[in-house]
Length: 418
Image 1 (cartoon, helix red, strand yellow):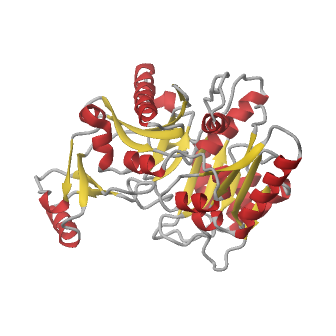
Image 2 (image 1 turned 90 degrees about the vertical axis):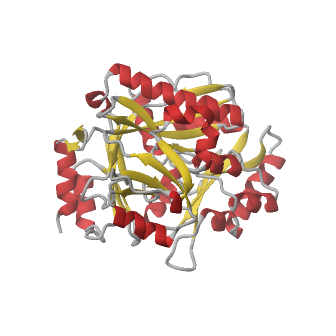
Image 3 (image 1 turned 90 degrees about the horizontal axis):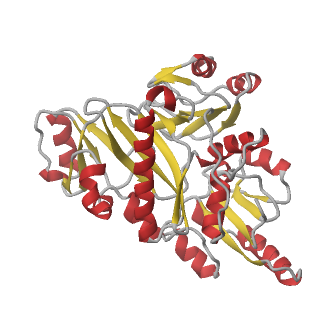
């Protein structure tokens, strides 16, 4: 990838979100000081800035953006660009997901934020406004659904899915399987707007894609590991991705349908003014034999850095092309993308979340996983559903839908050891 004419400063709460490419002179990272952050900083001391939180809680992206260290890094790069006589412009900023809290901070400092507008991201991701954004396509893309205040929802004797306007990794989605459960929620949130959808069952998939100028580029479809114990307590929580399992589960025709749906969403995003990465979650309804849209992530999907790492590994073997993250930066900077996205057919990652029974993972487990050839990132989170351990494999870990292969079983057994 040719160096850009503008240095990008990625500000992020968790450093792994920014590791879609190696930090360098034109790509700087500012993040919280964590053990993993310190490991990365040792590798790239001139290009990674760590910020100490005054409390045990990590600083949010807005707090990091507003930190004096960030202003110092910006000024250092700006002065160098100004004095070097090069064609470099003043640096710009990138965040994992733009929000209405982050935009005013960048504006107050006079900094350029290259993410798409927060208002557009909100309109697309919000489960309520998303239906209107999809317009007439909502009836085709989405499972049968209705939008309205919770007090109007009635129990018909059939389980259904209830979604609030916002959620993360499945925690905004609730399965209602009894009238008592529905009435309990209605008593607490009678006027809260909700999207009620028919319950469908089957495997889920994720597609990372991006809008670049007038084009939409589709990445590699991955099987979405969802709701599997002991990695999560929640039926709808995403705990990983497997790029090798896709062809064991989807036919070629189904795979094309998934990619076409992702492209259709991308064209709609383009027409709305979007640029850069977005993610689409899709489910195959095994009962009806249809592909349905489950979620649109109007931001950089969390699996992008590892997908890009797998793409770089293929490039090292001779594959020609560009990674998802490299294409993301080019799209946001308005640069032409002249190479294809690199194809991958193998690799997986899985996350052990904090659950009611799993509060921590032994240090020895992380060491054993690394000795077995896996890449491991440990976290100190304590909140329910937060990340505890991220395990990445160059090979797939799923034999099929909700079925681990030998590598998947090995990871599960090592984590379970006390």
